[in-house]
Amino acid sequence: MTTAAKIAPEYLLFGGAALLSLLAFTVLILVPAISSYGRGWEKATVGFLSIFVLVALIALGIAAGALIVYNWSEINKLLEDIGDIFSVALPSVR
Image (tube, rainbow, N blue to C red; front, top):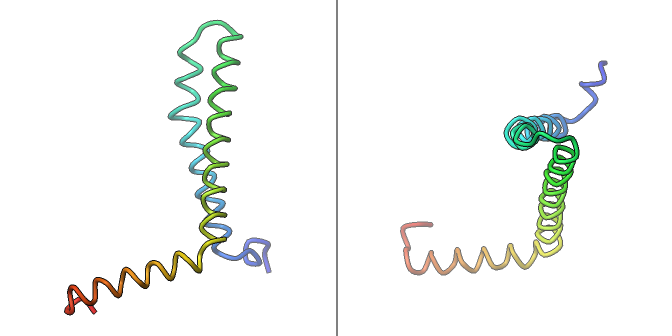
């Protein structure tokens, strides 16, 4: 059995999405930002700031995901309550 067969398909999909996102960040944001400046220190600075913003956005995404997982029971109850409201207002929906 190959190593790829032992890995769950979800991990392969998430890994591919992460790789594609990193490639898109590099091609669409990092390379144009670095090529906009001529001096070495300017290129290093803009590269650092671009990667800093990427890490900050990843951290915000992880924090939002953790918050959703932590409060999922309340979120699920809220969604059920909203569904009940719509089923009373629009009986043909359910």
